[in-house]
Image 1 (cartoon, rainbow, N blue to C red):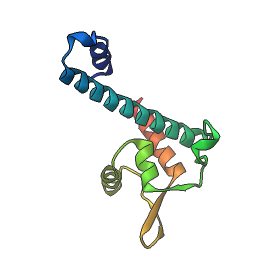
Image 2: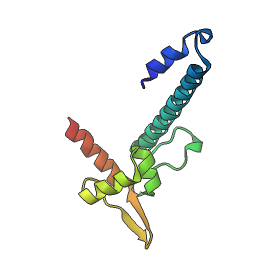
Image 3: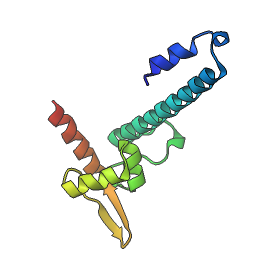
Length: 124
């Protein structure tokens, strides 16, 4: 469903709609707002990864070269699932993790940035 569809439906006079239609439109709008907020956070994370600067003090530590980040941060940064990351690693299409203990792995921020840059370069 496109955001413009939701906006068009929300602008219809509520007096001409059934209660069920109004509830469905509210749920669709809520879903779209949550999706857009997630996109915004993911883009902020990518900008932080690229520049090493955060938008505000509450955004957390800057991701600078040499940092190791958790799988959850990689997933959030790229907007893909954990299984997708591991599938890409198995296929050799994504940087392998660094084992930091018997049960923990991390990814180097510079490896992820180099991977992203290669995607951009290959798209040109």
